[in-house]
Image (cartoon, rainbow, N blue to C red; front, top):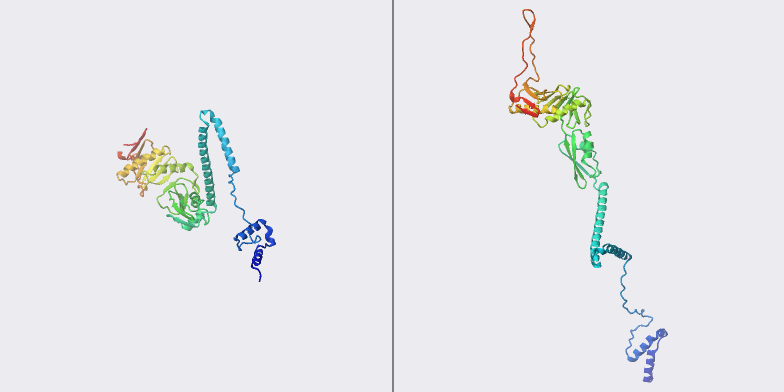
Length: 398
């Protein structure tokens, strides 16, 4: 049997045997030996080759001060230079440097706010410009078109005449452009109003014109509206239009203005018509074939004899007064209003369309064979109530 002491010693020697790779760290070896002697050694400890590299002790690094960027330094330099200029400018104002610094800070703050506002406005302007550009090029394309209003033309005719196409820009399609195109192809179109249904719908409201005048051209009647545009040509006279006589026209093209060859005669007729609008006169015919014997017909019953074209405005006013009095008396008689004198106008009964002629009688001779003429008077007693006079200062009624 082996000695127990020796066995214990050999056991301790086995325990203290250190592999060659463990001796890489002498400090670790000494520490391990000491721990074995004290009995606090743990077999779970790993060899240096198996342990991870020891983590470096965390040493609190001193907090580094943030260094200002180049931009911040540049801003500070500018502010400093600006303050120096402000101070040099106002140092003789009696204020201390601190007071001037506070004033400068207030001004600088306002200046910064103004720059920010300018930047925002500029950005908004750019954004609006981009939106408008897109609206006029890419966005808001027409997809649906509808026609409203009382018109003699079909929806297809109006759309085709106005040249509205699917895919056109909604905002570039305006009332003026459509009216200009459609009024030539469709003469009765006076105006086309445009309404938009965002984002892709458009509504065309048609407003038609009406014939105001008619002109006898050979065996047909040409109808013209108040603007002078030719509307159409018909074989018969229809509607309540003013028949213009004594005016020669070069051509009649529907949808285009009527070109009068005699501008003077046309102007006289328009002056009479425009002066009688809205009053008692309801003209049905105007004859200006002879500018010294101008006539017009009121309500197909009373002929107005203006004589020359002098003082037409005053003559139309006197005719309006006489016709107003006849209307008050409910006078439906046919007759003539003589307006040849600028100072006096009067009415006389007369048949505008005589259907009978006086029978011719043999001349009466005296005993010597000479022809005897019977005295007749052509003057008709005119009631004072329907006479009109024009004083030097204006027109008045007796």
